[in-house]
Image 1 (cartoon, helix red, strand yellow):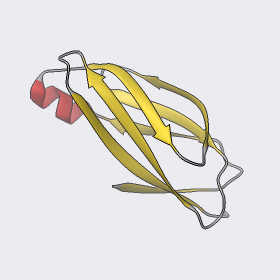
Image 2 (cartoon, helix red, strand yellow):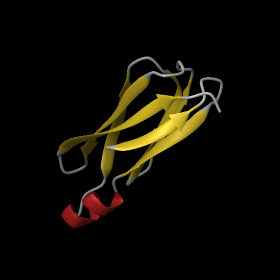
Image 3 (cartoon, one colour):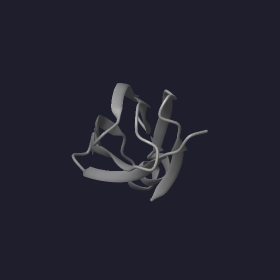
Image 4 (cartoon, one colour):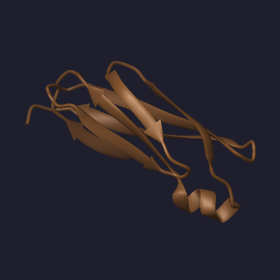
Length: 89
C-alpha cells in the first residue's frame, strides 16, 4: 500500500493508476468511487485508466486509508488503497 505525507492545511490530489492491470485484461474503467474516512473530499474524476481524488484536512499524527473502488466496462470490480499520514510540513 502506498503511503503519502500530507500537511492538514494542504489541498492535494492523489491518483490511482490502473493502466497496467487494465491493459493486461484488455478492459477500462467504467465507474470510480473513493472511500475515505476523516479527510474532506474536494472532488474526484477518472479517465479510462486513472482515478484521481482531491483531498483537504486531516490531523497531525493521524493515518487515513483512502480506497478507490472501480467497476470496469467488462463488469469487473476491484479496489486498492493508499495511506495518508498527517504531518506538519
